[in-house]
Image: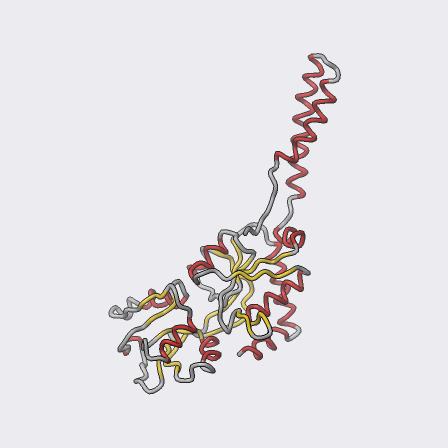
Length: 287
């Protein structure tokens, strides 16, 4: 899987070189051989400039290949296969974007959440639509598109147990998704709470951790407010205790590149669905 497919440039040069060779060698003289060198150099220089000028953008390639490749993750707020087929908030956004571009949509779910940003940064997909929180650390790896939603990360506990008021009040296992923005935030808060410990789980997602709280397998986790809101329909026992940070922003992630074609198209798309009310309608539908 690759976001960019470009053939070897040598294949462009070979036919033109053969034409130049035939023309120059027809004289059969030293002058002809000299002409061969001059013509070949001019042809190669011209083709380099032509090839550079015509090199397709990422958006050109998406349209040519008729496929938008999007990395996501399984979950009720992102992407899942329901009774009527694929659905989820991020899926709806990605599907509408692919329709806006006039191409097919190909959703990819990697084995672990920690794979999403490295795969995106490497260009193994055109973008990641996975409910990703914008952080300064992540900005070093990927380029974030327009913000489309604000959420609040919340410490979650089980109804019937003592509600903690701060991270210093925790009395039990705190388990979070490895590689998440929540893990980044806890690392920042460690100076303020030096006794704070947690387990970063590489195998389970937020929904599964909320289920573990409901089943009393762990005492605490951290979930974004939108995820908690949806999952309380399945786990009514789980409740928010307090926010661990001010509201944060969600956005799609793109590979860092000088090619702005897809990024600009996404920006125009989000401006459009914000202006016509579609984005607000989708948020209301799913949350």
